[in-house]
Image (cartoon, rainbow, N blue to C red; front, side):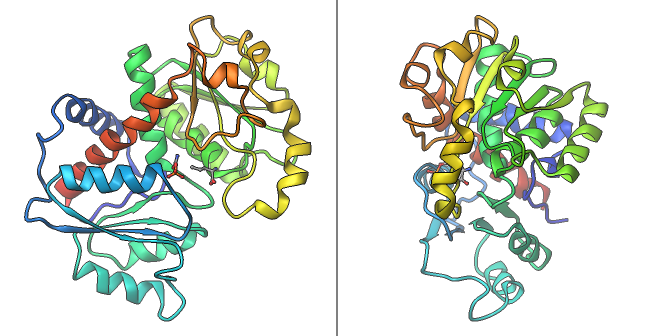
Length: 307
Ligand code: CP
Ligand code: NVA
């Protein structure tokens, strides 16, 4: 059966472990897997802008032996001239995989429901699961065993990153803490899903309003932009709301002394993270960006092997 990766919990705990193990192997041996040899084509469609996702998928697809077909924002307008279902049926006849960055998550669900090839969510308004695989690989490299570690995500707890950390880190058996201001807490159904997963993996889920409390003893500290793509009109209001959630050296003091700092990037040093933190010795953001390539190659190879 064709498998898709739209949400972090589309991989079971055992499957997530397999993908991360393959990601580590592909980092050591970049050309060990060639499932797209031919070259087979993969469509990589962007309704929102991108640097890392665009380059990491293009590089990864090439390294797997395939050829990426990149569609930039404004070029495709999926769902405008014809239904997403019809586009999905057509693309399934032409390419071996569909990677799509879009707004409404429901569009990805419609694409996957009508596709006979794997569909990968490369960011929607609700989830960014490819980023979480790269983050898990990065944390594993620095800390070893993921299960039992505590990670704290601070900032816009209602955005795609907050939701994906809940599901993906619970799947890994981690203790995930999410801190954001009132009105910007994660969706209740996603918290419930993460709690259910954590109960089976030995992890846990905790939601905070006080950033200092959420940071206590954390092994990994994470933030993201306060203004996600599509929220530009709310910028002034958001900057005023999130001020107390800036990751500063003082806030980092509350985490474990060997805590690492992650950020999916792009980063805004004047807002969500101080330069001393993101450019300091605890930051692993460049490894995290590189690992997008390895983790996504592993994901693509794994999905193709299930078909
Ligand atoms: N982290 C991330 O997805 O970056 P881009 O928006 O540049 O792809
Ligand atoms: N939350 C951010 C992530 C960017 C990679 C956004 O959606 O814009």
